[in-house]
Image (cartoon, rainbow, N blue to C red; front, side):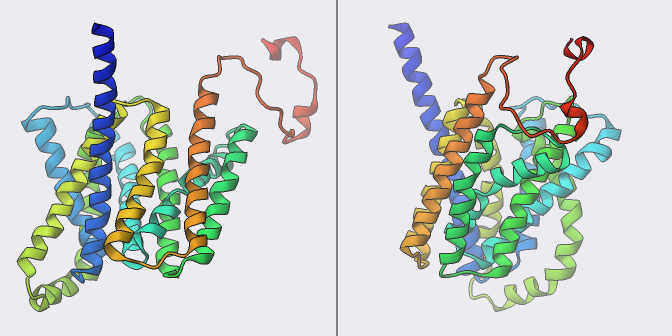
Length: 337
């Protein structure tokens, strides 16, 4: 009986974690699009900066004031040598995401973001010469094919927004690769990551946002019929953006890797559906098929990664083509050892 109740509580906790993660993620995306489209606040740098400010304050409250999470101590020298470069890429990633939302529909933007596994594998293969199983490469085929089909059939296609979303995928992959080398030795959760990176990101983005969008924001404030209500909505999106980071920490610790991967792909489908119901952007049949193919490819990619990670050490890898003549030479006993 106790084991059954414990199992039921585990399932309920996982479901609750996924639902609140979906809720925060979809809400942040929809509100940001609403800010750009309905409030006519067409300043993605300012929106990103507000998100960073709210996240900095929220992380400080959670760690220092409420003490809901212990602070992971970082050497002051490492903050500039390790955390600052990561914060720069983190800043670019968030800005490009908001820029893409400014110009393209949520459905198209979310589909392009699903291209991240492909850019992640390609960059690691190109930069680190990391080996990947043939099944990993095969799982990327439907992702790339689905993205191509979606892009060709997108009725609201905008080249600038498309490029921003695509470079956002590259920034996400670059952040993942840098984290493996720069943050080696530190086990950051999502809250501590925001605690250290958000202030740096605010410092990096504050001056460009002021110089490039400051005058436009002032003009918008004077011309908007209800500016203070709009400002409340804009800052609410920043608070929800921080809550999203907290929800990611909760869902990672409450679900398995496979469940997290499947839930992430279903989250994209939920975001696409809700955004279409709200904004009614035109979506063709082939566009929907391309989005579905991409999400299935992402699910298959996550499944292959999970299966390969479960292989016991010493499992023979899929043979690959030698990169040079030295690899064609037979191994001697010392090399085998």
